[in-house]
Length: 272
Image 1: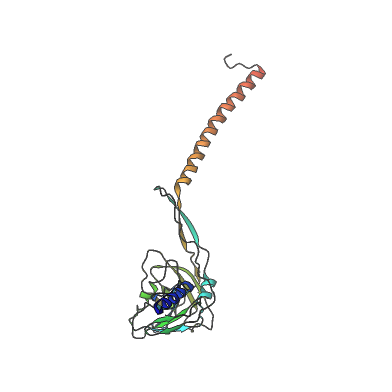
Image 2: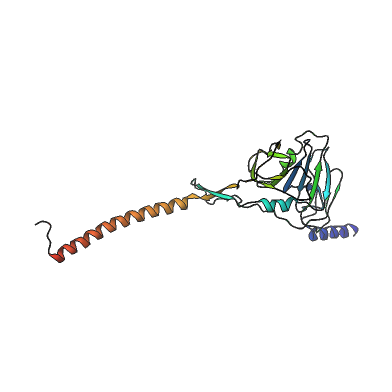
């Protein structure tokens, strides 16, 4: 009888919360902001998004220190500096029945934050029912300079990356979208501009490097490749060409018929 009661209680718990019961998963970063000081010390702020389980682990090096943040300027900066993308169509003529289009917009937008805690070793505890952005500050004074690369590599394709440094920034594996002056008390006074990147699909992210100096504002709209089924497009082109050909032939014979009627009306006979 006792075993039956325990089984019923467990079934009720699973039914009430089917998505958050089970083994602890790994938190998936959705966006990141890298802050680089003049001495090249680095601070990384990531948004791990909605909780998929009550307990999740951060896949970070052991020496990295994680601290929860109640808010971050990351979403507001992304929304402010993101520009419309340029979409290029790529016709597929290999006979695929349907074509899967690539994303054409960055879905990362500001939203409410969720309350959570971080317990050692790098475990996120989020109360059941909490949804929203979760910001985590990562620092590692004892780590080598490229310690943040392994964390940025966990971002999905087209994820936004804000880099704030006292100079021009280069981030291989990401598309530079915007260099824009920023003036917000939420950021330390390291430089005058921020760089907005977007992770490229199917490319590995390398270490972010920078060089001191003034950086002029600039905008480089991201280019997205949109795959479409080219067979219908090719069929339309062939149909238009055939229609133009038949229209030309019909116009020629129609003009000849009209010319003969005009000759007959005035009594003109070309053979005389």
